Amino acid sequence: MYHFLNYFFFVFHTLIILFNTFGYIPKKTRKWNLFILLLTCFSWFVLGIWYGWGFCFCTEWHWQVREHLGYYDRDSYTHFLVLKLTGINFSQHAVDIVTAAMFFISLALSLYLNIRDWRKKRSLSK
Image (cartoon, rainbow, N blue to C red):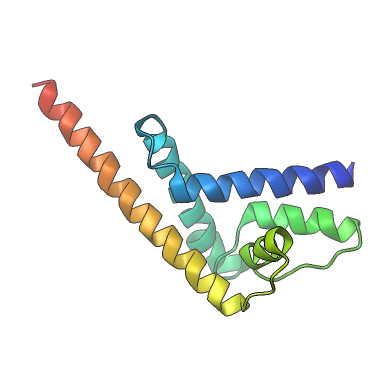
């Protein structure tokens, strides 16, 4: 069961990261993208007050599964992911900076496009 969960979280979390990064592009997914980005913000900054800056409950669950399999990963999930996908051990600090930059750029674009779409829809209904 833990092997299945390890693969599940690897795929699921990767898809969430990709959706956070690019989900604002298709108009049909913009609202969901903003919701998931805000949920990520909540996890990183609100839950992070108690569990540490950048806390992600999805990462925590994946680490717990991996501990049952004998792996003890407790660093950056994106660093782990980049290492697993490319085999290149980039600086964790550099990966964290790129992760934060991409996240905030995606959040800004998602907010801008969602507000623009909402205003456009509101002005058409008048």
